[in-house]
Length: 118
Image (cartoon, rainbow, N blue to C red; front, side):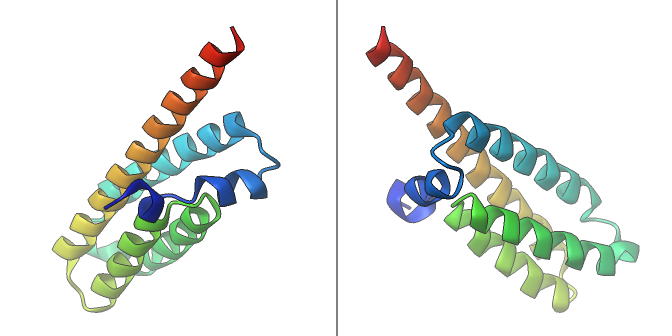
C-alpha cells in the first residue's frame, strides 16, 4: 500500500492547526489504545465493550488521517458482529502496525525539518 493511500498527513495536520508534535502525541495515544484493545480482543465477555472501543478507535484514526487503520478497524467491527474473535485480533494487529508506520513516518519528517532548520 502506498503512503498516500495509507495516511492523510496533510488532512490530519490541517485539522490540528499544523501542529506536527500534537499529531505525533495523538498517534502515540492511538497506538497505546490499539495495544489495549488488542490485549482485550481475546475476551468474548467484552463483546459490547469491544464494539464501542472499535467504533471509538475508528473515529480517532479517521481524525488522524490513518486511512489504512480505519479500514482495518471497519473490518474488525464486521468480524466482531460475525463472532470471529480471531479475525478481530488480526485486523486490530494490522491497524496497530499501520499506526506504528504512520508514527515512524512522522518521526522521520520531524527529523528532516530539524535538519533543514540547522
